[in-house]
Image (tube, rainbow, N blue to C red):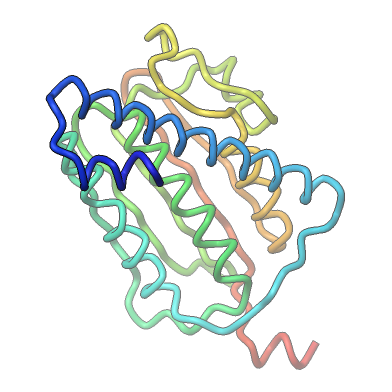
Length: 210
């Protein structure tokens, strides 16, 4: 925060701007790491509570995609969504689902250099399915077996130029399971990956009846 204030208040040289930006970026990275460690600790100790509410899933998806579109466009990527029309309100923890969606879309942007990311949302039988599809580097078969484990990062072959804590996918999986859903991945190296969230499509009314 202080580095951002100083950048605004002081006339800096190009080198100083770069230095202050590095401080700011490092602080953000450290904050993310701390939050992820706290999240995974709370989840594994059973101290994460789920607060269900009724909301429109299409609005949540549009907001998540819109908030991350600038980061995709900065890399020359297209980020778009396809949402089935007429979906009823979903009844689950909105904040936790949004956290998972943003993490998956962020990952797709991070590991995609050319092409696009598509977020599909549709209804199948009594399930809501959300697919995050990218045209990125893909994931090898060996990594697919462990990608949702804590502190796991895939071998990109890029000498670890992609920053991360190795906790994002582990947290996402545990959160989706808390919401009585599942998360899975299919991928092909050099072609891209698809992360799929499947949630029980219960409404507030049906939950009350239970």
